[in-house]
Amino acid sequence: MTPELKGFLLVSGIKVSVAFGTLFLIIAFVTWLERRVAAWIQNRIGPNRVGPFGLFQPIADGIKNFVKEELLPGQADRTLFILAPAMAFVPSLLLFAVIPFAAPLPVSFDFTLPVLGRFVHVGPVSMVIADLPIGFLFILAISSLAVYGIVFAGWSSGNKYSLLGGLRSSAQMVSYEIAMGMSLVPVLLVGGNVKLTELVRLQQDSLWFILALTVGFVLFAISALAENNRLPFDLPEAEGELVGGYHTEYSSMRFATFFLAEYGALVTMSALMATLFFGGWDIPGSWDEGEPSVIVSLATLAMFLAKTFFFILCYIWIRWTLPRFRFDQLMALGWKVMLPLVLTYIMILATAVWAFDTAGLAFGRTYVVALFGVNVVLLLAILWGLDRNRIIWGQRLTREGSV
Amino acid sequence: MAIRVVVVKRPEREISYLRAALKGMAMTFRHLLQKKFTMQYPEQRSTDDWSLSPRWRGTHRMLTDEQGRAKCVACGLCPQICPANCIKLVPGEDEVGHRYPLIYEIDEFRCVFCGYCQEVCPEEAIHVGVHYENAEYERERFVYDLERLCAQTHPVSTLWDPSDPKGE
Image (cartoon, rainbow over the protein chains, first blue to last red):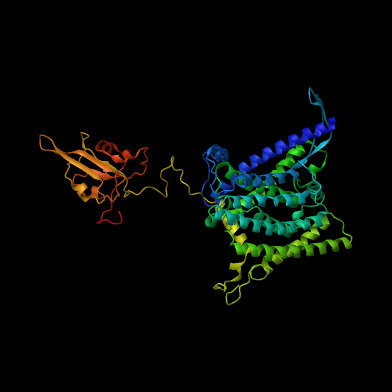
């Protein structure tokens, strides 16, 4: 091994452990945040006993889950039952690997260890664990793997409620994956790239993509809700109908793993929204675009976390506002509303991009602002022109009342 | 055959998806900032809006006279009237002819907290209490004997007065 390779491995190892350690901390914090915000919305206080402001509540919950009995139902398919939580958990963490979370950090070292030999690293380290050239395609690919964990859990429990939960989730996640993938096509159209670091750089140079792709963001956010099984689309669990859905038979740490997977996916999706549409770690202005330095890295990291937490809060807020969809409504929304809408949007946007290119407008601030104009018109059209019973309404009821 | 669905014609603003969702979000956000109603129970047992009613009928208390003896004269009215049959009374009499209870036990598990014992008591001895924290480690501890009943210190219920139904 060359000293450079060893240096790379060292840097990557540190990045992986620090990033995932932080991710776990954030997940723990988010479970606390969810309960607090839920309580505030319901005019309650929420967990405030363990530690300052109840911040140690997730730790207490973790200890509780560790010491509880792990039940293995007699009718369960043993191998799949044990495998399922891990299969749900791993994809949600894996997604985080491709998300750039701060400006490059200048690191240089050259030292020699007694047994391991010489380590060399020169120049800025990009603050992303794996800067894959396939970028968000990787995210779409891996996030769809999460459905296996849930389906396996539902099947292997040997319980009809679990099975129904698993069934629902497979139908739901497969349906909304299409809308989600499609809603990222506009990003590709405007950015011309799927690499996330590259997209962040583009947004830094011009304006954030939320302006150029407002409608795309809305569609992506809605499908992300469905993809993460969050309310109003949490039909796989649907505690009122299915007891606990796919995790009815799970207890102690195996249940907690599902729980962590859910919140991990929540954090990653929020981070992805921040990266794709809100400039990633970009701080408005050009202050963070100079030479890499530790201060810039830390500031951009804080900015990235702030954006991510903004979306997490929005998710929580939506969860405690909207009631759950019925299953046929969910499917109708996915196939009869989201998909046509996102396809239409791609067409309109592609036409706009083509028109701009033909007119000789190069990518930059003017380009983005012009696209924003198109988006505002579309958004107003959706909000006032196409709302329910006009076009955005999966099931049209006839006057006689049959569907 | 399709299930018949009754279609109610509603104004458009009431049935919109997106606008209605945004309206709902605005409402929950207002609630997020509003005053919270939680009472921090073990530290805080009553608030301005909530306290235990003076007519609350909880576990019993036997009142005592100046010498610390139970006021009970073992007349036998309370076991007689008790609909749950939870009072055990064995009367005794001392050398000057004063009656007193040899055994006086109330099984709080059987008790239905009707308050008849307090109502019927001619000596105002047995009372139901304004009290609700009764947890014990053993079931046996829920049979309160005379000593325990006398040792209770919580306030006693005022019960409902038919001549003053609103408690004024």
